[in-house]
Image (cartoon, rainbow, N blue to C red; front, side, top):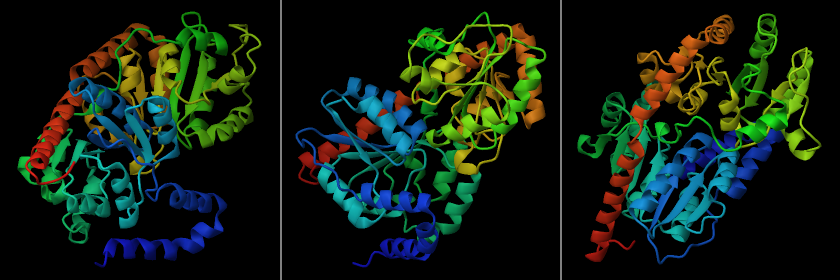
Length: 452
């Protein structure tokens, strides 16, 4: 049978080839995708039913951790196939699941039917779980042909994406109508999925799992060791942590820091870019602004003693250029700015996780571009639990106020922590729906319908 999606994808790759072949970075990215994401994976032990959970990148793979733990507790003996798309997501997956015997970590296949079939044949999941809006027409259709139920959880669809999907609905071949269940973050998203073809009886409003991934805590393991390694003294110094920053934001933050030092001479700045490939670029920016630089990776390679503590002048700007330590830096902060929110980097990059520092009881500042966390931000703003700034000038004003009005900042942070507590529970609701789906598959199989 002719697969029109395969033909369309092939034509698109061919038409774009003059561009991606000419640019070395893009060429490497495309060739790596064809090398790693064609569904060529090792098989698994088929004696246990498997749940396949797809998480695109870093934020989604972090969300899978609590889901997998909950499913393990609710139903011992399951196997999990966790798939990711990005390199950063895959590396985080290795950290979370590299030693887990009940988890197979794979690259999500490109949406060619052969790649999808190859992966599904090797891993034979009983249920597929997609996070947020990671739906691809070939993948959904190949699952439907196998009568393999697909459950979308933590569902959300932005206004822009909704418009595009609604326009392209005739080309999607009933993709949304093939979803077995859709669990969405709020009623607005429920209405949008229904309009795209999901039956209302298959839609549930379950909230966002992003609150569940954040642990409410006063302290976390490893924060003191990190502080010592970086020459930071919480309580004796004010520490401003800018986490998950994106292109264009560090250029705004560094001049603000220079001006803040005029009033707060003990203030230390920590920059943690979102993407590892930007670490060297940000290091260059810090030096170009005339600041000293201390890279976290250097303290790991050369543990010859901690950097000097508070002195008469400002310490070097700290660059968090390692993976998995952002939460520790947040734990040391007096005030936090969450990046990819101040500069418009496009709708797919609107916002990084502001829930995590809020759960740690930190005053949090974000820019206006937080669409990826719309439901969470609605709760924070309704509770007056987070500062939303529009530009560099208002960011400087907000940081200055948090540093000078510490009691007010602490009250805002306490409200944010309570928002996190009250928003938790979606993971358990999702787990119950997934297991109900698994049970229905097993019942059909037992009756001679579908092999699991």
